[in-house]
Image 1 (tube, rainbow, N blue to C red):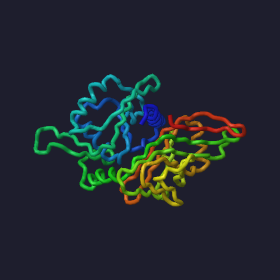
Image 2: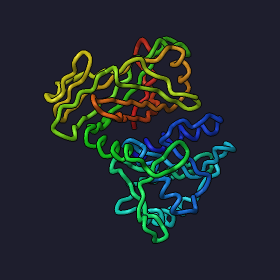
Image 3: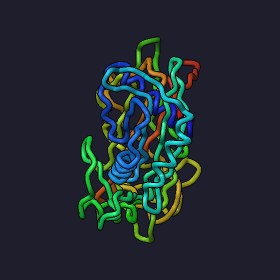
Length: 313
């Protein structure tokens, strides 16, 4: 994920906190200050990452959600804090991208953890007979992973393809200010790579798409998702059928979705940022393939209509 996407995601969360809206994104953890218990924090990060189904997770330091305050955090403390956390992982900690996010004169520290190399294992302190643990996030708590969860971690990564977002765009059109005709297009240009030699089939009816914007209490669901070939020539290893996409090898493909209702579109008219989330469920897979894009408004005009565009930085 690019720094601009991380910052956009962070601002979406901060705006929700300021508005008193619940943070329903299970990939996000908020801390009012740097956690001082290194073992507890390492265990929480590992559990969060292991339960994230391969999606990146975002920790924001310097946000007091209960009091709806942006307290801010000292970015310099990261240099001392992270090595202590890293040392408590057995063999491999999750890769981390850190970012300084300014907001109204305060600094929120964004920590994005990549989770694709799960499972993550932490060392158990005390020198007893139990040396390591595979933590698992369950609601707001952390416990040891169960056997079925370990199996899910190991099998999901081997079956699901990787999906790289190359371009994402959301367009709205209006005849006059404040009058929205509808969503012209939600489009993802992606590059898909199967992890093995077996064919991957993704039925359209098993795919989900949702739109989220600041101050929205819940994400708005799109009505359908479908795959289409790229305009300048379809990838020979990908077949876009009427009811599913069939993937026999690496290639580019376009993912589009039908819009939510007109009322929903009207609500996002003044939002400079939106987030679009896709969950693609391959046949026989127990976990979805997540596709997430944070989009920023970019103005554009035509002769007969005014367009509001949201694009990926």
